[in-house]
View 1 (cartoon, helix red, strand yellow):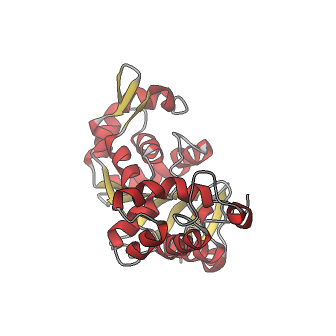
View 2: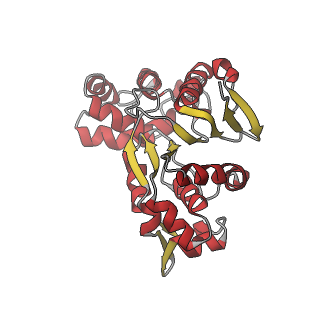
View 3: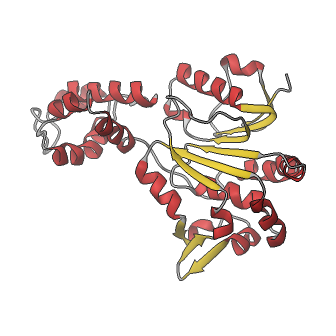
Length: 289
């Protein structure tokens, strides 16, 4: 359904005085300006279904009144953007990334840690936490004693997202046991606790993660660089210009020789191409220059 079709006739049960084409366009523009997410034609009903509860809660009555409010109320605007982000993910998604991490990246991180140097990783757009906890378990490894030594070192994993509801689930770190089936069983055994049909990430793994609310297109408070950045299946919602700017910022945020993992349908193009070398499917290494 394209935009013209969506509004050619009133949508079932929705008064055109409450929600119409101009409201959809206005919300789309606000979301794009704030987060880079593109709402293409055909998303009119999705916008209505996700934003209508906020309109009702605000007491604005109509989407037009609500749009006028969020143009100046930045807190409510952030809630609107968060409501329209997609938070679909799962454990060990794109497992070849974790294979590469374990075999090619982790050994160098442990050597750096053993030399007394800090190690920093970033799960950017962490959503509900499955990627973050997959990364942490792969980092700590199948040996409990070694993993605990790693966790006691100067090592931190930043997990960021702009959606508060997703961050809360990530922090809670509790999932249906069946969701962890893609994770190697020795990692699940070492770093989680099972309670009936639910599994919680254990304290050792939790101890090295810091969760932060962060819009990738706005200012980044982090001053240091990273050894690893995972940002997967986030940029698929951006236009090409926004993608290239973001990847260039990631490249600048990586140490020389550090690794960037992106989503299976994403590619590095633009200025960052000069700094990032492909070392595997959607895996890039920052040049040493």
